Length: 69
Image 1 (cartoon, rainbow, N blue to C red):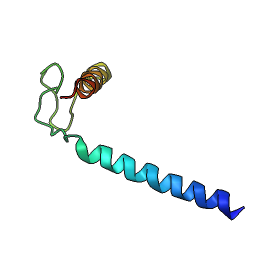
Image 2 (cartoon, rainbow, N blue to C red; image 1 turned 135 degrees about the vertical axis):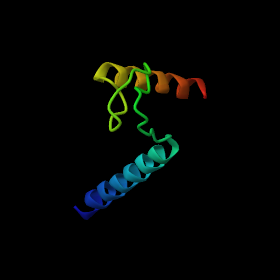
Image 3 (cartoon, rainbow, N blue to C red; image 1 turned 90 degrees about the vertical axis):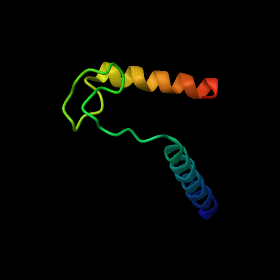
């Protein structure tokens, strides 16, 4: 039984390491009062003006990563 628990613990640790490595590669966005996708004026604490812009930005960034940029 400990074999299964050991493998599960090892897998969880690897998943966490992979997730941390992925996050550290991504550039962090800073709030500058404009939507990062459509450049609309927004409150300074926000990054995007709405969910659609956030989703479009994520899709665009994913496409750029797939293209190697």
